[in-house]
Image (cartoon, rainbow over all chains, first blue to last red; front, side):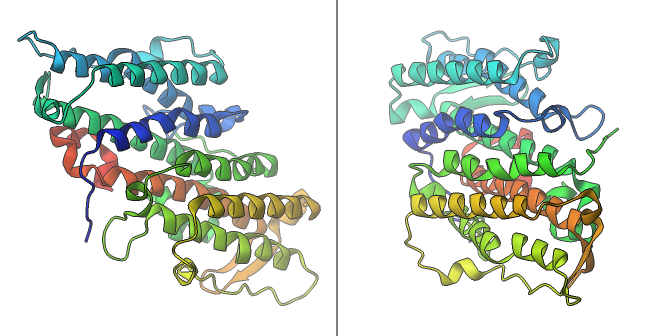
Length: 178
Length: 178
């Protein structure tokens, strides 16, 4: 039986703090073949995914948390642009992007702390442009799961580059079937 | 179109070297809730997965590479015990396991280098107890993909702990459906 964890602000921050360092371990001195290959047309490379995570830090998570906690009655979030990273210079060094992500995440977690969130605040609501009413707890949980989802995606995109090289082992490697 | 990479020994080693550091970033000071929760009965926690990777270093990859390259005509691999980690002390500190994995991987990559593999060696074959004939190239590719698969699994197992906390965002989070 899957006994899921209760939401816990500190345990969420614990993971959010890790993500830039996990990505740094992945991307440091990584060959362009691993970095820039994707899963086929209209899919993302590890480099694209990093750009997407940077845009989330700039325009999504903490901004939405502040909308939820603001005294204003208007709680509608701006839609998030999932493709913003493709408008950026595609030649920016990955080490530069990692440093940018590290700095943005650090600042955003400082801001999160300064919001001084109380247990009762977690039930406060904002309005997602597509999903409707969502709570602060759901937003913060999603921030964590979104990070983990993209770490898994980076692993999968890289694994697929060797799909035709593993021979009969393909049968044992579930990641190649996703 | 997915343009897959050709097998490249150096680019494989590049990723194999990274895995212990990626796992260290994940596991350093990680709460037990994240570390020891799994996806339900008969599934593995991040802690179990780390134990499994350690057993791979001890009994699988490099040993099989050496069987393939040995002058002996007998090339049958020992079956790999996927559950060996459950016979170990379940209270060993994760930091100790990370250090063990780091040391084992480092040694195994040194051994790999000392095998001085030539392009023509990559086609040499061993016999997998279930899959039959496999080449050295397939073994080494599988080593890389196996690492990446387990990194993705660790991310997924942790993400699932928050499955019921993300509310309507579940629809956007593919990792929760796997």
